[in-house]
Structure formats: C-alpha cells, structure tokens
Image (cartoon, rainbow, N blue to C red; front, side, top):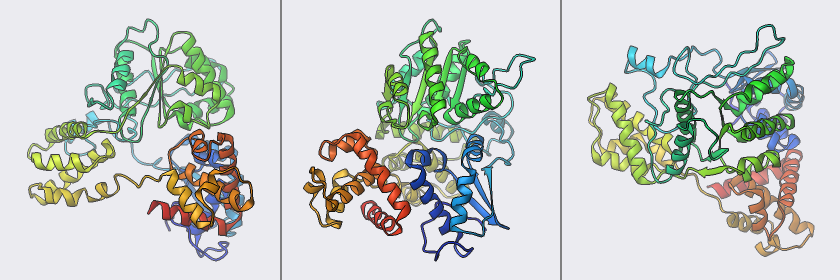
Length: 501
C-alpha cells in the first residue's frame, strides 16, 4: 500500500495498530514538530514522506542523499521510537531517496537531437529546480579532486548547471531587471575584484532566481573563471562528508580557492557547525576579493534560523528582490515559451486571444505559465482540434483556481481567535497577562507565524509592539502543547481551516 505523510489527519482509534497507518504517520510528524521545534522540523522532516509499511518495516523517503544521511545519523532512533508509540506494528525504519533508482535523464540538447518531440522543452525563467544533467556537457567546474595520496576524499561536487538556463533565455521585465543586470555584470566581469559582494537575490517560487544563478555560472565559466554552484543541501552534505572522512581542512581550502561561489536555497542551511563553516567560508571569499552570489526565498533579515553574524554578512552586499510577474512580463514569457515549442511542433498555433487570456489568468509564476503551455500543446496534439479560448479555460482551470492561495492577514487571525475565546482584539494586543488572554494571544501569534510570511519582529509589532523573542516563545509553547494535547491540536487546525477557506 502506498501512503502519503501529507494526508489529512484522521481519527484512527488509538493509532497503535495497522488499522490507520496514514493517520498514525500524521501524528508522528505532529509529535516530531512539537518535540523538536518548528525550525528543526522544517529543515529535516518537512520533506520526509511515508512510502509504505510492510512486514513491520516503515519505508520513508526524502528527496536528497544529504537528508537521508543526516536523518539516519541523527534522528533515526527518535523517528522509530515516535512511530512505535503510534503504531506498535512498526519495528524498523528504512530511509530511501525518492527517484534514486530512476534512469538517468539525457540532457536537453541530447533530447532535442534524438527525439525533438520527447522530454522537457526549453525552459524559460527558473520555473523549477533544474534536473541534473548527466554526462559531460557545458557545465561549471563542479568537482575539485583531492590530491593524490591524501587520506579520505573531498566531496566538493557542485550541482551541474542546466544548459537551458542562460542569460539568452531569461526574459527581462520590470520586476527582475535589477537582479538580471547585477547578475550579468558580475558574471561577465574580468574577475579583477568582486562587485556587490555578496549579491543576494530573493524571490518566491518560479520567479527566476535559480535561472539567474545558472546563467551567471555559465557566463562566468565562459570568461575563464573558476566557479562552483551548490545548493544548500549539497554544501551541507559536502561538509558533513568531509568531517566523516577527516578531510575537512582540504574541503575548506578547495572551496575557498575558487573565483565565484554560487549558493542556492541558503534558507535551508542548518546546524551550528555547518553555519559556522559557511560563515567562515563567506568571510574568506569576500575578504580575498572572490565573488559570492546567494539566493533564497526571503531577505537575509528574515532568516531567523541562520546565525546572526552570517545574516549580517549576507545583508552587507547588494540585496535584490525579484518581484511578481506583471501582465506584460507574463505575456513575454508566454510568447517566448510558445516560440520554443513551435521549433519541435511547427503546426502548433495559439491565437493572440488565447495568449492574452492565459497571460491575464495565470498570475502566480513562470512555472504555471510553462504548465499552461504544456496543457495547450497536449490538447492540440491529442485531439487535433484548434486551441480556442474555451478549450484554454478548461485546460488551465486548475492553474487558475490554485494560482493565488488566500492571503491571511494578521488582523483576521486576531479577530477570529478573539471571537473564538470570548475576548476582544484589544485584549490580545494589550499588556494583560491573565490566562484567559495569554492563551488566545499565543495561539494568534502561532497562527500568524504559520499562515503568513511576516517575520517574527513584524508579528511582534502587530501584537502591541512586542519583542520578537516573545513571539518565538509563544510559537514554541503552542507547538509543544499541540503535540501533547490532541484537543488543542484539533482546535488550532479548525482555526487554520476557517482562516484559509
């Protein structure tokens, strides 16, 4: 049986038998979140999924080798103990990497030459984390081997660059022009000193930040510079592996010997020793005039889990946000995407009316625009019928419906919680410390952290000018209580649904 850890929580009786394993797994994750805290859970367990349970063995999967290694080294016993408390039929835990046994995917160039109608077409904007390209190809100098005879090995394999993600394929608009100009200036410089160091780019999903990082890597390599592109997972895996093989010094020296370090998804860097080493590496590269480019989903000031000194260093360079796509930029991306598709499907036609409708209807990100084109192409090739506005509406209905999840406001949270607990909103914002007011205030703070993108300091300001440490204390306290009190957990879940519906 296939099970998904993200399934809705169920009753499942006491959860200790085989009757409702999905509900038991949901409770396991909830307990881990409560016991370990939100930051640790988000870093190591948010992407942990239950594949199946067979013969007392629970098979869990994660997306990367690093997460597998880290969980097995640090948390396997904890996960097993927690799982057995919810389902005593589980006697062993196995952790695997999702997709690890899948056959290697050929590069985009190989696909186009051998079978132009198969495989992903040219990607425009960074609409997804690019798949690793296999075999030799136009990629950055991603491996720095250890000297012969040196004990241990230095795992410094950078993630391959996607050959499709270049400056030439990046569509520039008002929301990304500054980030594009800064990345291109850095990549095409002669390497004589660093510019805007570090360059810190932050944006939501599918807005182009990863595309820019890959494009900068390609252009810098063409200029003859030594470059390495790393995801946060890859950096952490390399450092942990170097410690295991007693080659940490060699790892550090080789990482600092490059001209350009590109680091993606910096928000996922966790662990005190890893953060310390990242900070030392950052300082060493910047102080020696080497260029650093970093990307994240939020500005450095909001990376609460990251060491304060590292955050300060990241904020000390040029911080650029890539904003949402306006309609003109969406139309340009869509047009470029359609042109790319026509190279392999010459008979695929989309009228200006259909293009205008799609650009107007899909507002979230470039990934949804790419999905829309794929749906229109599937309709045209499978049915043989022309693409009309009516068929486009049907084809992209799910993208339009889900493009903008409801934005929850802190004020709405405060009003709902106050009403639920028979207090006033002014009570929640006041200095009153009675139990009748403190509990709803802390629940409202917790929901504000979970359901909005506001930082802890901002949440504190919206709750009567409180300090961010007060908010953090409230969040951790409610997390702990939810793990211990099923009634409160159901209560908070109900409030979440009421706010999101």
